[in-house]
Structure formats: C-alpha cells, structure tokens
Image: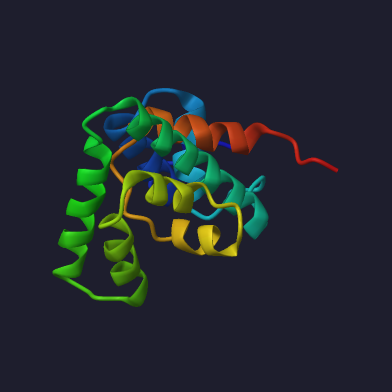
Length: 148
C-alpha cells in the first residue's frame, strides 16, 4: 500500500507515524492501516480476542517478572484517573478486581472464556508494554496466516 499521495490522510498518518512511533516500515503500515480501518488480516472478533489475549499474556509476563508489581500500580492509577472522568460498570468491576491479590487478577487477564474476553476489552493495563512490544504482537497477528 502506498502512502505517498501528498495531502491524503494516509500520507499525513505516515509522516506522523515515522516521527512519533517507529521507523520500521511494517509498524508504520500497521499504524496507518489501523487508523484508516484497512486491516485486511484482522477481520473477526475471534482474531481480535486472540490478539488481546496475547497482549494480556505479555502484560502478565512483565508483572510476573517484577517483584514490586509496578504494573499493578499502573493499572490502579489508570482506573483512578478514568473514574475521575467517567464511571462505568466495567470500570467499577476492574477497580474491585484490582483490590484483590495478583494471582486472582492474573487469572482474570488470562481467562480464555467469555468473562476474560469481555474484561480484556477495557482493561486498565495500558502503559505496561512498550510501543515496540505492543506493535510486535500486532505485527505477528497481522502476518500469521489463519488456521483452516
């Protein structure tokens, strides 16, 4: 896909992605494809749920590796910040979950059932993974062929 048509939204996104995110052309293409809704290999809810689960697994690995569990603090801060602007049932649910111990929270993040899928759609663990780590997962799911 070409992004060099001057003045187009894709061209502006391309330039912004290069400046703000990464110079890796695949990551830039994924950023643009996501922003303009042209993500041909990510069509089903199942695909998105699997990618979300993989992101959660990476978050869990980060928190497991940190004896101070700074990622939990970050998620709690995110919830606190969001509650200042809105109060939704799922936000209150996450606040209650984050008051529990790590093994329980970990189990929720890794739950492959409907409840885990629902909660991962609005989880407060943003900011745990680096941009590169996150986009590496996106890239993997973008390039992996679908199983028959």
